[in-house]
Length: 101
Image 1 (tube, helix red, strand yellow):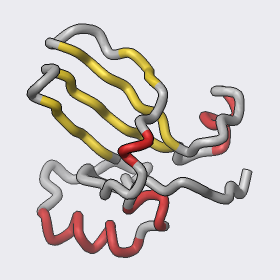
Image 2 (cartoon, one colour):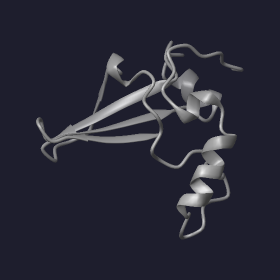
Image 3 (tube, one colour):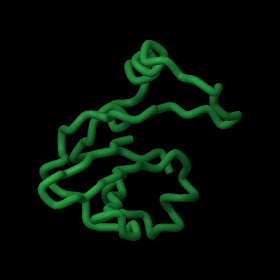
Image 4 (tube, rainbow, N blue to C red):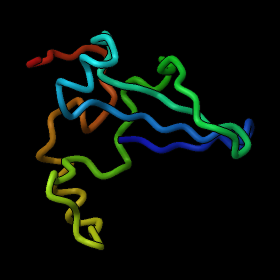
């Protein structure tokens, strides 16, 4: 849901969340609904602890991805519509969440 780059450390970060209970359960039912991965200087991606400074940060990647696949082009207007319809935990990184799993 979030892609970020820190030029001072040449580090890319991706923050993702769970769409299905099975994935959450397979990872040991973590307390946070988010996973953060980082790649420094073009190296391999590694899972890291979610940085607390990310709390409240808004999503900048497509949310509400269709299980049947996406069209070749999703315009910004459609992305904004989907973002407005999404649950709060998909619109921004929240501290607390309630799971239906």
